[in-house]
Amino acid sequence: MKSKLFTLDWRDLINGLFVAILTALLTGVIDILGNGAVFDWVHIKPVLIAGLSAACAYLLKSLSTNSRNQLFTKEPG
Image: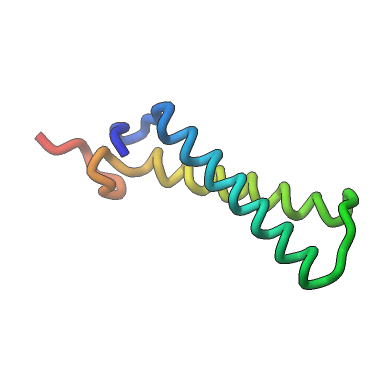
């Protein structure tokens, strides 16, 4: 992570989307395998919500850390 405190760069955005996609896929596969569900809006909606939640959580974490991954700390030097 290279972005400064309270900033995001393209790498943060790409990592956030990657986490969101993986979270949504894994949640959906686990739900389908566990419950024998089919692909309809009722089963896809929670998967999308989980993916968006993961993306938001990652981006908020990235906003609140500096380039050395220190939480709410100014850039050193």
